[in-house]
Image: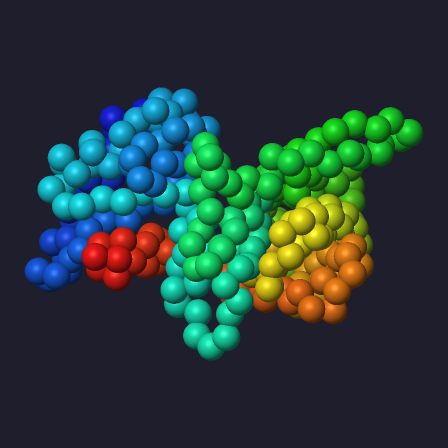
Length: 281
């Protein structure tokens, strides 16, 4: 909810309901992931797209309502923590977690610790700028503006209104909605307009990913996002990014595509609680 107090009260009711269903006396606490600049140690939402949340002491406020320990952090950093704690087999101690959704984020794991940064905003690669040439005019746009799911859906909608993207239009008529599921289905059915849009989007993603790899030289990059559910887009991203990797990065830095799941953020928050309130105790 945009209203902070309403959000906290709703959240407390949901948590109490879950606790009641668990029938467990061994719950460590509650982990919460949310967007924005999150100060994990102080439990403060430093900055958030929902203005009423900014500056709020979410940890303290929620602990008073549910009487359990609470830990908060940025939602994508928690996905990265969940990955590193659940990963089996070999993994380098330094890697990047490239997450594509409504926007793009790329937390960094160094020595098994996720970097938060001086202002608790590390990993916000979606707000880096890319120079785009359009009809002879060059202008700067953020990565989020260029590749976010809202942008993809808006461009597909415009193409359908112009009489294009015929396969996607038929899918939307049949299923009654336009979402990423329908876009990817149209792509796999060789809708030329949809394929062209996604290829351009992934080229921008490749530029951003190559910049990350060339800057920090991670052992590998974990790629997570609904758009990467199919092999076609995975291959396109490998080509778009790999061709821009510098030196040995092209040969030795691997991209690992994590199978997409809507609840990885929640699982990451749970792993975070285990780390903070059990493993580090």
